[in-house]
Image (cartoon, rainbow, N blue to C red; front, side):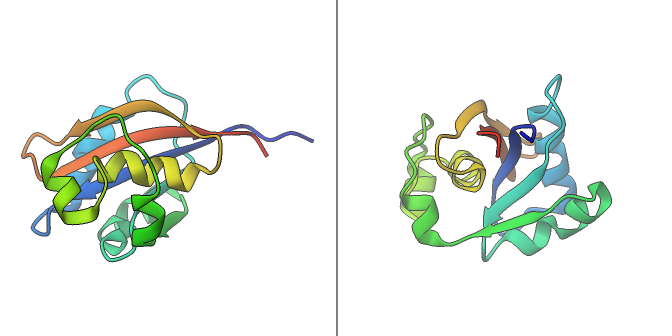
Length: 126
C-alpha cells in the first residue's frame, strides 16, 4: 500500500533564536500546504525544535553537517555558506530529510524577527 508523500519543514536559525521565532517561520512557510509530517534541522540546533515537534506530534530529524553540505539549494546566502557550507540551512535541511528525489515546495521563509528560517520539501511516497 502506498503512503502519502513526506512533507518536511526544514529550519535554520541563529544561536539566539527562540522557539517562537521558529514557530513563526513555520507558520509563514506552511500557509495553504498539506500538513507537515516531520521537522528537520542541523543536529546541533535540532533540540530547540523539540517543543514544536512534541506539540504537533511530529518526528524531529537531526541532520549531520555532511548531509547539509551535499544538498544544492536555490537560495544562496553568504552567511549560510560561511557558517554551514550550504546556501540555505532551512532548504538543505528540508531536502535532506525528505530523502532522495525530494523537491522544494516552499523556499525559505524568514521569521519576523529575522532569527529563524523555514523551508518545506516534499519527498517521494514510500
